Length: 304
Image (cartoon, rainbow, N blue to C red; front, side, top):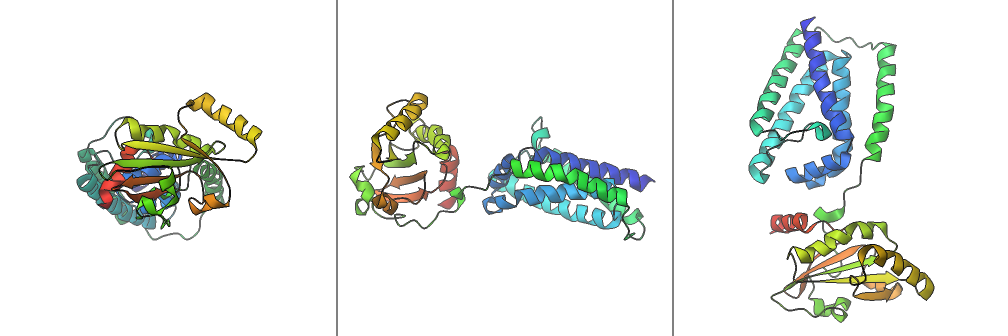
């Protein structure tokens, strides 16, 4: 009986942790990136669903011996990952409970909690008898009823990670700007840095990046910023789109308007696309929503 109670407690903690993250999968993606594992952001939903599945099985007493073993393995992995993030990237709060992390937790608390959970899982593993391969129907229906809304919420709050952490081999990457069409719109100096932001008035992803774009100048991340908007050849439609845009962001943001024709495809393949220029050379090409200058700066630092 004791092992069942302990099993329910462990499972409830996993459920609380998983639900806290499934409410905002994007936040969990960012946490993975902050940990220093940017390439694993795409697996955020699967990590969360696995944690929830483990919690449900423990609470419902489904294969407790196997689940407690998986719990111990998971705790060891989580602890190693957190240790790496703490000493490598200065992460103090593990963010394990997602939206339920109401206060900052110290690393000591995280280690103590994981040790206790490991000990409780070991207790269940030792005390549990031989596995019963049969699962009652009501448990199966309960699992289905639980995961249908969870999967929907997980998909709704998930976003495919932008390619901020994996630079595409754009044709302009690492080229001197004077060898590109962009030199028609910007005169550079070797001791200065620049950001060229290519966008469209009708692109919602572009709008989402505008404040970050302006922050590059206000924070001093770059010395100069240039905005190039791609427009249609229809003057009336272009005027309408421009008016809607300037109503929200002002009239002094756009430096150039270029008609979106075949020539433009030699510059970009999608909007928004941003070019970071340093030492008269295009150092970075971001073919996605523009990140904040603080995240971008950290990214640049990690790549040096």
